[in-house]
Each structure stands twice: as structure tokens, then as C-alpha cells.
View (cartoon, rainbow, N blue to C red):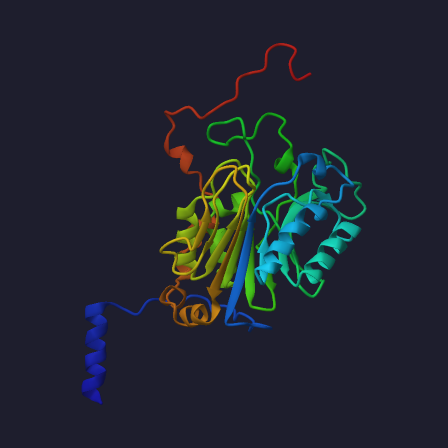
Length: 332
């Protein structure tokens, strides 16, 4: 016994002390329901901008895609960003979305501009009265969950998309979400993020840590949803990742863990597509149960990422991008 103690002490001297233990993590609630696999459909499409005006019924444009996904026996259909247009959560439009999800026996993810209760829908909306919100309509006909975009996409006229344009409104004046939407569905748990959220890797990491097995990244942009981001997110977070984009762009994809390749992708700009793929949830859960990166996380040393650093201050001799000053009389 004495020899064993001395050996352990010697090992501590040679190898160094054991790492400090961080704060006790929160247990993640068990799944309410689960299946061994899920069939996912992703719609790369768009609808006429005229249909996005207030009081227009945008669900009708989604129904043909729901039928196509249902014909493929999909469990989950993911649409691109913005397609619902403007809405209130308690409205005939959202009720109709949920009814159609039930009719087609689908879980459906789609987003638009949520206007807060008691706020009239108008364009442009008043600052602080709206959010870019994803809805999850369950196949049981109920609204299963929501997600508000956490990072505002701004600066479309800058080569760096920063800073915001002078007097820019749009997402620059919306209410930002504070954490990812996490939704339990009949096959398992999903985590939600919207477009620019995906450029902040924490947006993928946080829902995985809270138990999401499938990350749903909804987009609407003229470019391509980057496959290297999708694949890296799958590997680092130990999740399957699904991305959607409007057909004005491309890059909608289904990616199974560990992300070595995209299982299905729509890489052609301007093309409509319905991607359908099966994802193994049974094996993913074994991977997540034993994932070494989850077990060896050291949150006590990650405080740096939660502080407001200003790395651009390292270049005092460089001039940041600025917009041209308006000519006399403009903007008045």
C-alpha cells in the first residue's frame, strides 16, 4: 500500500498535478421521445416577394413542398429563412402553418418577421418591435418551438459587411435572440440557428451542449452556404447538421456526423431542389455518450470567449472602412 502511494506521488511529480476541476455542469434533460433514425427534407426555394407583403398568405406557397416531402416520407422539412413574411405568433397564418404540418404528417421549420403582440404589422417596422424568428410546427399540429436570430446581418454596402450603413434599419433594429431555440420532436432534439448566427461558432456549440442532436441552420442569401462550416460544425459539436438556403443562392445540405462529407447538397446557384436523406440517430447517441471532447471540455479556461475583446485595436496604423460622406443636401 505504501509503495502504491509513493508511486502515485511520484507520478504526480513527473506528470504534474491533475487539472483543476471546473464548475459542475448542468445535466441535460432526457429525451421525451426518440427514434433510431430521422428522414430529413430540405427545400431550396423561394417565393415571390409580392407574397411577403403584410396580410398575404405565405403558407400556400409552402404546401406543395410539404406534399413533396410527405411523399418522400420525411419526418422533418426545413425551409429557408424569411418565407413566412410578417406575422404574429398568435395568428391565423401560424395556425394554418401548424394545420398543414399536421395534414402532411411533418415537422416543419420555417421563419419570417415576428411582430410582437399588440404591434401592428407594417413596413418598415418600428425599432425594437420585431424579430427574425424561426417557427417549428410539429406534426401533431402544435407550435413546438421558436428561435430568434441572435446576430444581426448588417452593412450590405461594405466589402466587409461592417460597419452598418448610415441610418441602416432592417436587422440592425430588430430584437436579438439570447440563446438557441432547442426543440424536442418525436424523433429527438434539434437546435436552431439562423443565417449569420452560423458565423459565430458558439451558435453551433451551445445547442449541442444543451442536448441537440440535429442542428438546423436556416439561411436566405445570394451566395452559398459554406460546406466547410457545415462539416466543421458537425465534427466539433458531434451532431448532424442540416442547412437550408433560398434558391436565389445555394448550398442547402444534409451532413451526417462526423462531417467528413456532405451527404446531400444543392450547389447550383439559383436552382430549386428538395434534398432528402436519412440520418442515424441511434449511433449518433452512442457517439455523444462517449465523445471525448464533451467529456474533456474545460469551461473554466474558456472565459476569454465571453469577454468583449477588440482585436482590431492591434492595427492602429490601418484605417478602417468608412462610407463616403454624403454630398451636400443628401440624406435630409
